Image 1 (tube, rainbow, N blue to C red):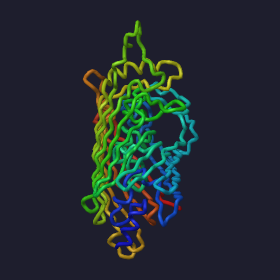
Image 2: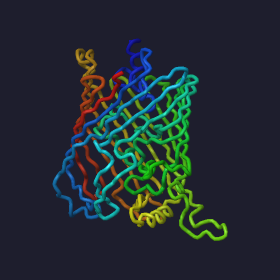
Image 3: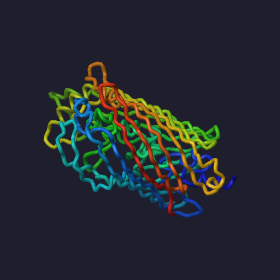
Image 4: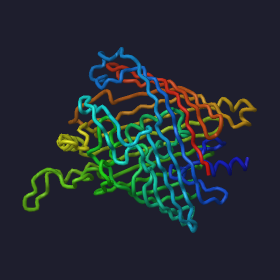
Length: 442
């Protein structure tokens, strides 16, 4: 049993007696220096095959009855393929990097813009679909005190803290958090973290979010990105996370974010007259963003249960919508004209039981077969009293399926899911099949 515990603490994989302890946050996964080796190489990847039994027309919500009987459609995807490279320089100095390839893209794609009445646009994003999600240098003073500077994962919410594919049962990342929060949320800044007793903690300062990238479909998700060759940091964001491991097999986490999102884009000045040093029209609009999240993981007695609850607030939402709608009209503008709600919410819970735990031979071979269920509710647009309402942003989603792990590093996934709306809209069932790996090669 002691060998299993030691292996768990030095492994990324969530397959031993208490894997909630194995990876404490996403930054830890970049470096797994065992047996005195200074170089670590690893990663994770996913392949997803989907059949969606609903319409994919852009008007399927505004004209729901017209698209009720549309044919199903299928999608093949490679959501993420990631390479970890880490190096321990010695004397407490270390380097961590994470390079991610999303959807096999090269930075250029054709997309149908919902806010432009279905207009087709060629999208070229900064960094494209190849992103440097982590690049930091760390000085470790002790187990309780570590300073990390560079491009860092912002561990707000369960999905960002533990986004690798063996940390959730569904084929795609949990939909609620993945919709309303940047995912994976990574930004440049400074982090102080450590562990003392049963507590793991992290405090960080990063570049602020950009209010002009917020929208109705994804709330603040796109606000962490940048359309430019650099990340604008006129304003700053502050994030914190604390996890407790007191009870065997149980991890409870609390995380949050606060920062200003207005005046955090290029150019820095705003519209309005500025006569004799007077303030411009929107100088006092702050667009404060506040996000709170509570999450947990229970991994014991052959059960894995995970859950989270997130709630967020955007100040001056109606004013922000007025400003960015005007800016979005400018030719080739990188800003979204879609409105953003004052609040957003995402609540989810999943539970799976390892059926192979009852078969001695398979248990000895470390094979696992989880039968799971998941439920979540989320709303990416909760308007202020003076904002227009959109009922289709409220979604309930259920999923049932299996995860088969022939090896600790590999999971074969299959699920049936149904995204459910208010009665005036059409539900959106689908079947998803996937395979994923997660581990270290060196």
